[in-house]
Image 1 (cartoon, rainbow, N blue to C red):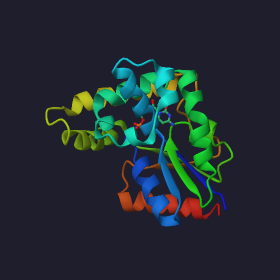
Image 2: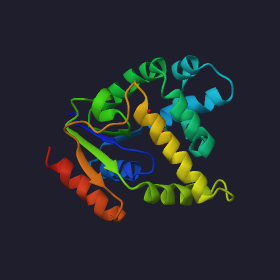
Image 3: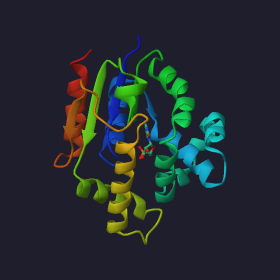
Image 4: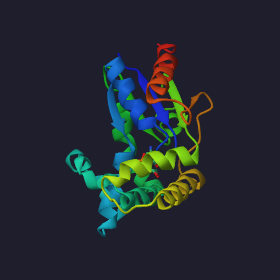
Length: 201
Ligand code: C5P
């Protein structure tokens, strides 16, 4: 059987955590599509041409922990503006979504562009302050000097670039279920997501 769960939302909204938990609950495969753009961004940061980087990306390099850093986040959202980069990553994501046994993909354009026919679509949000607090905590492990204000302004800059671009902007699909995790525990957010998906089965 095939069953696609599309989970979109801005940075640090909780979509990645929800996507992993949902995949484990239903026994579906999970793809963090942001990592693809981070992989391309990392190569471009080192001087490679964006399209060349997108066409030659291999799974192994997505395990590099440096991809999670703040500099790569900004490069990822810069290369994500380019339609040719998005096009080069499309087939891989669509094939993953239709794999047998079910799939969960999280990103920005899964429910709108990659899998408009997904069986279940979620859009996960949280306030700017909540998201910056979460991301600041994560980034401190890699960079002990990073400040909350830097993280907040980086997030806002990335959100603006992701929402205002003309190729696959960050917008909820018309039929997406909205989950605002600002005042929710992880457990409550995961339970809400699982209930919404179970409803579509
Ligand atoms: O989700 P994450 O923060 O890892 O994504 C990094 C960047 O990749 C985002 O800011 C966005 O510009 C881009 N992205 C995208 N479409 C996706 C997933 C990520 O444009 N489906």
